[in-house]
Amino acid sequence: MTHGEPSASLQTVASEIDNAERPSMTRLINFRSLLLLVIFATAAVALASLAFAYQAGLIPASRLISPDDLVKILQSGKSEKPLMIQVGSHVLFTQAHIPGSEYIGPASNESGLVSLRKRVESLPRNRFIVLYCGCCPWDHCPNVKPADDALHALSFTNVKILYISNNFGADWVEKGYPVAKGD
Amino acid sequence: MTRQSTPSDMKGMGTSQPSLAPDFSLPDLTGEKLDLSSYRGKVVLLDFWATWCDSCREEIPRFVELQKKYGDQGMQIIGVSMDDGPEPVREFHRRFKMNYPVVMGNAKTGELYGGVLGLPIAFLIGRDGRISAKHTGATDIRVIEKEIVNLLQSGAGSTSPGS
Image: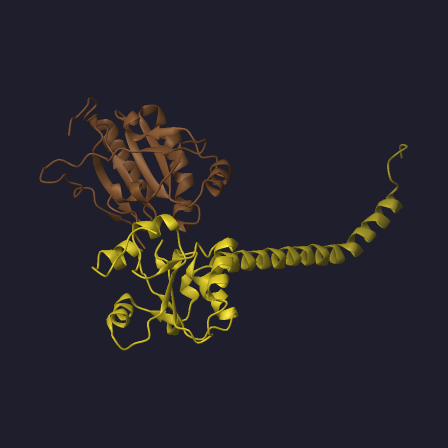
């Protein structure tokens, strides 16, 4: 035996220790893998929740109003007229908006939400309010869901969201519904 | 939602030719004016977008790749932001390493292009300054790339076309 080489007995002992520890090492590796998997899955769910949090597709159908139905209400002499609030871009609002509606600002950012809350804070909670945007296809609109959530949190009970399938141009202007321009 | 493509209906009023892309002079993100007419002779992809527009954001990295790929061949992408202010656009431009100019659009610009009442909307403009296609909503980047290649290869209107 040269100096530095383990003896046969030492190798045997090492081998026994190695064999004895292997199952626990395997369990440790499995535990780590499981832990990583859980962390990854949790992060993925959190990211997915974040991504979908603003999507209008999550708004219950019972809270939606179609362009046709809104126009009927606006043209009716009897129905209560809603407060209509555009929660999208000012550039889009200036080009075309529903006559009588008010620009608040994109509800996808905090300043828009602050403006929205300020605008409605003094209103009776049963006030008929219609929110709309139309910046993007419905499932990609970042604005109507946060706006709806904000009014819901303020206990408003009579809020409708204008369902705009593609965008305000295609689903309102080109349909021939009434349009106003400017601020 | 799929993008609505109208490659052949961008006709001028009462003519058989596609219409000239309306010129504009708008501030870029540094405040310098950018004139669309100064890009005459290039194939231009004019992209109306906004930082808060989900579909727009998805397209930006692909446009960056297109600019890298075809910039040397005479293609220029110009972004027209429909954001209400330049701050988020500057941040976005930096973060996404956008390699093409972005100007701040306004309602007048939107109206010049028939109303930009939904995003994204992209116009493909030939070397002659005429609009050859309009794409509304999210689209397959391969469709746009094919159109760019066709316009680059056609070499149409490398001189001033008149109106």
